Length: 447
Image 1: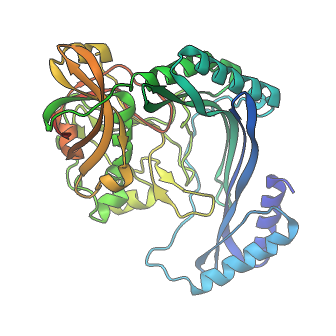
Image 2 (image 1 turned 90 degrees about the horizontal axis):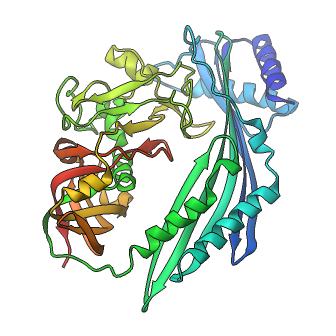
Image 3 (image 1 turned 180 degrees about the horizontal axis):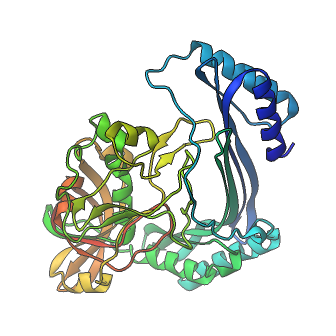
C-alpha cells in the first residue's frame, strides 16, 4: 500500500471503531553513498528507513502507536495498540491535534532527478575527488575518507481535523578527509560541500583542494604559552560552538530551569553585533522547511536582534504555557519520537568584515578552526566550556604557523557578550551555521 491508501484505510477503520480524531506522522528516507579508497570502490551503500506514528482520541483519551510497515494487517495493530495505550496512559496535559495554519509558504522545488542519479556518476565523482586530492600536494599520503552521496526525505502529517502537510527534499553531498605527512609528522584535514539539485553542481575539484589546504596548513604545529589572547573563531569553529549551546534558546529548557536565558526576554544578552536568526524559508539551504513537526507553517524568527533576546524556540505546547504564539519550532527526533523543540536553519547574521580583515587587525592572537570534545567539554546549564582545539597563531596581522595541544576555556554567554566583530563568511552546510567571530580575549591553556 502507498502512504495515501494506508492513511485513508486507517482513518476509515478508526472511525468505525470509535476514534473521534486521528493523525499520522509519516517519514520515509533513502540514501545512496559511494566511498572510494586507493582508486577502487570501498563501499556502495543503499539505506532506506522511516515509518509511521499514529495518535488518536478514543473514549476521550489520546493513544499512540507506531510501525515501520505499511501493510493492511498493520492497521488493526495500530488502532488496537493506541486504544490500549490510551486506557493506561496518564498525562497532566492532554495532547491535542492541530487543524493547521491558515496558509503555508510555497514548497521549494523538489529535484526528483537527483534520486535517480546513476551509480556511475557517484563513483566517478568520488574517484575524481580522490585523484585530485592525492595529486594536489606531495605531502598528501592518503584520502582516508572520500565519499559522494545522495539522499531524499519525505514527511507527511495528516489528521482528521483538516491538517495535510507534505514535503519531499533531496540533497547531494561530497566529502573528503585526507592525511598529510612531512618529516615524521602526520596531520589530517577535510572539506565538504552539497547541492540540492545535482551531484554535477558540486565543485568536486574545489572540495578536494580545500581539504588538502586544510591538512597541509596544520603541518609544523606546536603549542603556545598559556595566557589570555584575542581569539577568532573561524566560521566552522564558531558554528561548532553555537551548535553545542542551541538548547539554551529552547522554551522547554527555559521552562525546566536549564537555561540562563530564562526571564531575559527584551534584555541585552549578546554584543550589539550579534543577530541570531532561524529562517527555514531560505532558498538553497540544506535545512529548509515550510512546516514544523506539528504542522504549523514556518516563518523567519529573530531570536536575538542586535544583542537583544527577542524570543525562545516554541512549539504549540510551550507557547500555550507561556501565553505567546508558537514560533513553529516543533521537532521530532524520529517518526515515533515525542514532540520537542528545535531550530530549523539557525545562523548568526553575517557582518561586513572578511576573515582576512580580522586577521590583519590582530597584532598577536589565535584563530581557532576546530573544537574537540564538545559533548564532554561543554555545560549548557552554566555555559562553561573547556575544549581542546586546533588553530593558527597570528602575529602582526599575519598567520605565522599552526597551533595544537591547546585548550580554550570560557563561558558561552560571555562569548555572546564579547563578540566585537562578525565576519561575512557565512557558509550554509548544515542546520546551524555562523560566520567567523572575533573576541577581545579568551583563556588559552598551552605550555
